[in-house]
Length: 87
Image (tube, rainbow, N blue to C red; front, side):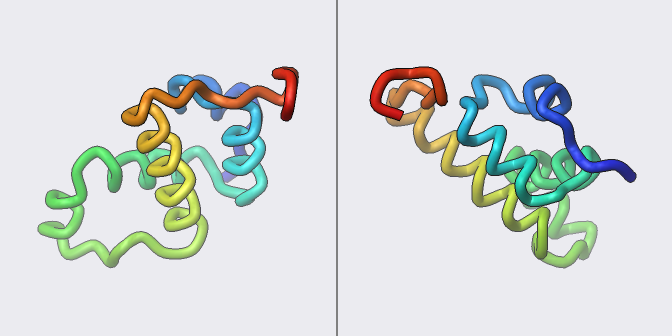
C-alpha cells in the first residue's frame, strides 16, 4: 500500500482545495484508507451493520477532513487555494 499522491486525492475528492489536499496527504493515508473514509461519510449505517469498528486512526482523520470540506460546500464557501490572494 502506497501513500496518496496529489493526483490520487484530486481524482478521489471532488472540489478539494490545495489546503485540503495537503491535509489529506499529510495524514500518510493510503488510497484504501481514503476510500474507507469516503464510505463512512457516504453512509455509515451499512458499515455499522457489518459490525465494523468505528473509523479510527488515519481513516478517522480523513473522515474529519472530508466532513469539513462537505460542510464548507453546503455553506456555499468556495474552496481555498494556495495561489489565491490572502492565503
